Every structure is written in C-alpha cells, then in structure tokens.
Length: 144
Image (tube, rainbow, N blue to C red; front, side, top):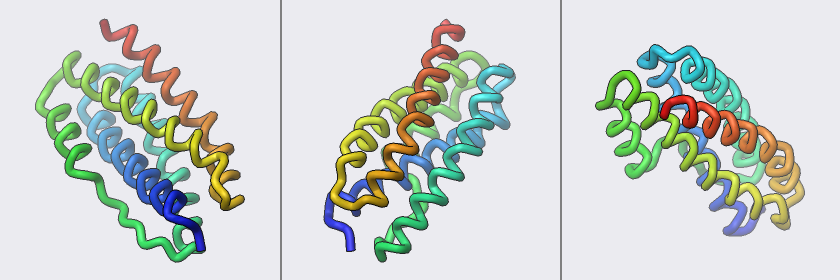
C-alpha cells in the first residue's frame, strides 16, 4: 500500500489528466486554429495514455480514484467554452499552461516518492508534461 502523499499524487494526477482531456476535446471541436487543434489532439492522446498508466498504479495499490474533473477545473472549462475564435484559443492555451505548470510541480515531488512505481511513472511522464508546456507557451506567443 502507498502512503498519503502517493494517494494524493494519484488522485491529483488523474484529475489533471481528465481536465486536459475534457478541455482538449472541446478545443479540438471548437478551434479554427490548426496549431491549437493539433495541440489538443496531442493532449488527448498523451493524457489518455498517462491516465491509463496512472489508473493501473491506482488499481495495484487499491487507491479509489475517480475520473472526474474538480469544480474549479469544471468552472475554468465552462468559462473557456463561452469564448469564441481567438479568445477561445487563448483561454484554452492559458488553462493548459496553468495546469501543466501545476502538474510539473506535482510530478517533480512524486519522482522522489517512497514507492518505486510512482517514482518511475513520474520520471517517465515529466518530459511529456514539459514538452506540452513548451508547446502551449509557443502557441500562446503566436496568439498574441
């Protein structure tokens, strides 16, 4: 069994992934910008894979984790969805930047967790999250 910090990491990681997936599906369907659409498709593919792997760790360690989005993230997604065109793209990319910055902090802590599976998962996933953040920042610059 994992300790409380690992349980927290698993739950927060799954929720962050679900947020990225949900927001990105909306972006994929709403945006007219090919860079934003391509980014959203990458987000969906990568975060489905990340969440699948994290869910396996949760199951192995008997951690009850849901695949829901927090009220705070749901409100951010709804706020983003009320925009259109450039304002939508900017709001989506801002959400992705903010969430990936937070996720990177969480994963940096998890890479030193006592549980080796959590450590390996965090170390393997961090470069993907960092690449997502770099891509989102580059897109944000192009949307100014």
